[in-house]
Length: 227
Image (tube, rainbow, N blue to C red; front, top):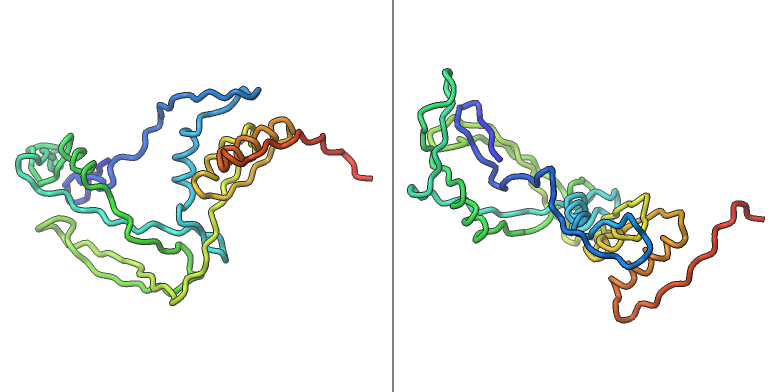
């Protein structure tokens, strides 16, 4: 979750580390006759990461971006981690640059999670964009680094956004469609087996309306040719 700048000071990602390559997710039983059903918790982070909770532009389909406010970590001398300053001769010196780390940083982040302050588009279909520039040091006493920001000015009236769409070309028992529906996304599934298609329809319908949904009839095989 960190990287070394040209200045030789190792910095840390304020968002924390990324999700690891190996995920440990508990299996979940499924009573129907489908033997390749994965647990909903497996697909949930993928849908959340690949689509916008707010929705997408009704004109071009670009997702809307979350605006997040993150509080800076306090500079408590007792909890600073020792970060090496990298010089020409390699790492050394154990220079303390005032970055909180380890268990103290994890505990602080748990108590001060990021806050969503709004949303903005990732396209130019709605409202107007303004580009501003400037420069500031990356850390106290450091060199000034140029920066560039895009500021969005929304219109007086915002259009109704469309839900983002999740595609599953092998729908199977409908896990992807079920999780997408529960997360407020639209979905498109492709399934050639009519028995599996019925399983998916029943599973998604029961998840969305558990008290009122009525199971569907098994559809007939589609004809190869239409007379």
